[in-house]
Length: 160
Image 1 (cartoon, rainbow, N blue to C red):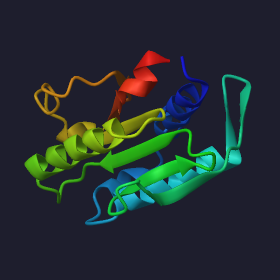
Image 2 (image 1 turned 60 degrees about the vertical axis):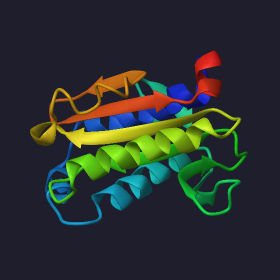
Image 3 (image 1 turned 90 degrees about the vertical axis):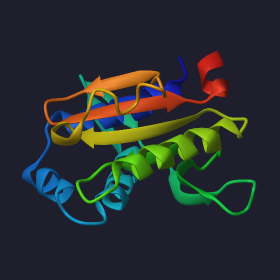
């Protein structure tokens, strides 16, 4: 398994394991919890973190890095440009069909690059529906009491 993939999954798992009151409240806010979440994940990955007594060292990530097409941007990319992360967060004020289509767009974007990449979607349990991603078939799902995280890998990462 790819080392950076394991690190990112551990960071996501840790972040959502004990949701704070601030996190619970921001999910209900209009416009912005996705951007907030991208910044929080960026901070955790850059600073490093501890899971089960294992210290994950900080690794430098960039935000809003341009894809080779020159017109679209990736949410988080490590400084070596060897791991790319697209991140979506669903909230009550978003149209569900539009949200799912934007996640599918992210899956297509990471499918066009030749380094390991993932598309991640975070959904509060109160909005989750069984059929939301049945045609996408996530590669990894992280279940928490308040949130579900779906992860789709690109073909490069699947081969590692």
